[in-house]
Image 1: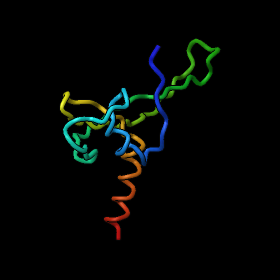
Image 2: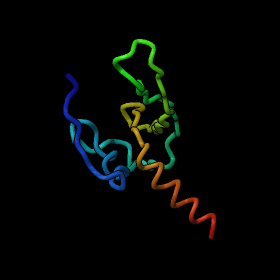
Image 3: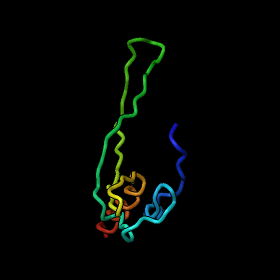
Length: 98
């Protein structure tokens, strides 16, 4: 079983990544999340129309997930940023529109 994950708002992600999984401050200086390499992955959420029928249609929808690969003195680490990217992308889009 995976260890429990801390829950926090997406807006706190840049602050949260300053500490490692043990809660210790990362070495090597402050990490700028927006400067980390952006990666993406598409997964699919699928539903069976009529689960009781063997030949029922299966419908799937893409789910885009975003990650950042950051670096500290121990090496690189990945952070899922899907919710954070949505907030920063929409605010950047609004800035470009004005």
